[in-house]
Length: 455
Figure (cartoon, rainbow, N blue to C red):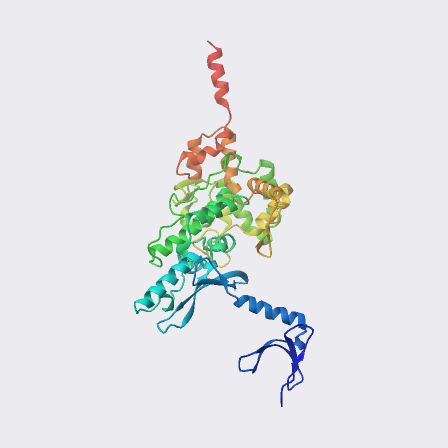
């Protein structure tokens, strides 16, 4: 029995019934031997209209359509990569039997371009001429992407690096445009462009961290022979981020700090560790990682001092306990080697999010009002919003501001010079401490006037 096709309102789109009376749309193609070739494009039961069926077919044709390039033997087709539009380059040459062969070279998203494709075309033609296999016919080398390098790096970091979660976040949110690119294709210009874009939305410190993560990933790949003949484009001295003027670093006023501690005390029953961490950070001026890594061996109750070990960022030092710090330390259980372990007994990696919520409640002007992300996707901000976001971010009081507050109060008291502040904070150089110089009392002017007025 001959199959009956009924033409729809759209040219070339037909419909016919199946054995179970389900209607299927087809595009009918007449072959040279006059047999009909059916190409299924959808079912009527799927609520697809003839127009939609025809468009679906046209899309398929468009995807397979060849597009010429400036080079003979090289063309490209539309394709997709991770749901995004892409181009795939192909070459066509005659094999040893004189028959045309089409081979895929690679995608534009993989940094494959028309010039590279043409080189592969010339190599293929030359190899055929000399009786050799064309390079493109050999099993293609799997591209080692930036994400491939990260996946190996992060497994190593989870064992040896306490801040691996922060690295993972930076990679996921800020380096995603490089994820699927071949690692060795990344150039210094790529990271300079990334730096320029990120500095529109983030502080120099954050951008430095983003680039540091990229540098560590690439160094890991180079150091473990995962790639060869490649220099790290973000290596030492590669990409420089101009540091912002740290003289404007935000710090808590005495009134704000008092209000914050009072509010945290109200939440002691549910968030006592946030209160304890806040007091230790404010009263010692230590970095969060230094407080989180404290062990009971570092606590000397007899001398009433706390020993902070040397780190890559800072020098070792002994800090005197204040009465409130001593009170907190005495009250803590000693079931773990860590002074302030997490609920799992491990080292705390960052201040709990609840801290920032409470700070923003106590200091309403402290809130970031500009939304940068929605559903984990970055929103395109206006220039006005970018400027406001940069201003809010720069002045925002966070857990790290507790360290700046400690140093700022020391400077403003007039009882400490820069060398003493340097030693208290564990800075490796006085240059790092100079950000607080503008807070020192201008007693020099009074002393100078008194000296020369007497002459």
